[in-house]
Figure 1 (cartoon, helix red, strand yellow):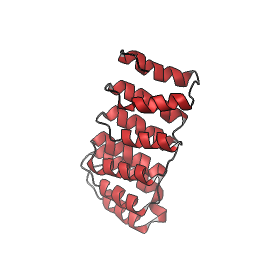
Figure 2 (spheres, rainbow, N blue to C red):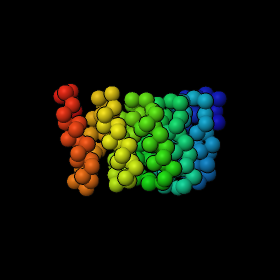
Figure 3 (cartoon, rainbow, N blue to C red):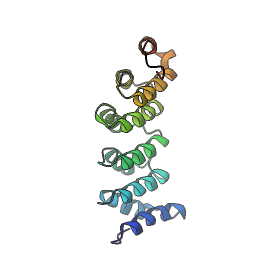
Figure 4 (cartoon, rainbow, N blue to C red):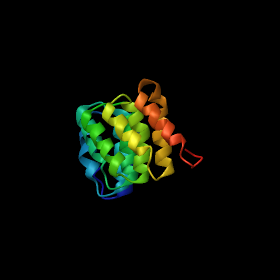
Length: 173
């Protein structure tokens, strides 16, 4: 994991998981290397940590930091790792909401789906998703609509907002 060659560092992280060689010592090294200059190394380490021990508080915190990484692939890997384990840490939700509001189109789309899976009943989150429902990007709009459609029966305000969205002239909505 400390080799000068980025490909070796990246492959080492994947190999550790593949051969089930993850222990506390390896987790500590992986977490230290999450700041690697190479995005592919950060991505593979996020994937490895996400597949193994994201429920450990230190690992979850490290992955939450990665959802704010400069590289969209790293953010996606960290987001998926956290989503798989349905972590409902307030810091995680806060970081996701920030991406939902300020992230790239891909970030907003991914986060809309993830937030609906990990914490669908959070009133503030529902409010943010209802705002994203009117996003200019149709993929983001569609992701928010899908999530909100699954919780509409539990929240009359969501149902009203979905009805407004149905009046959108774009047929994909």
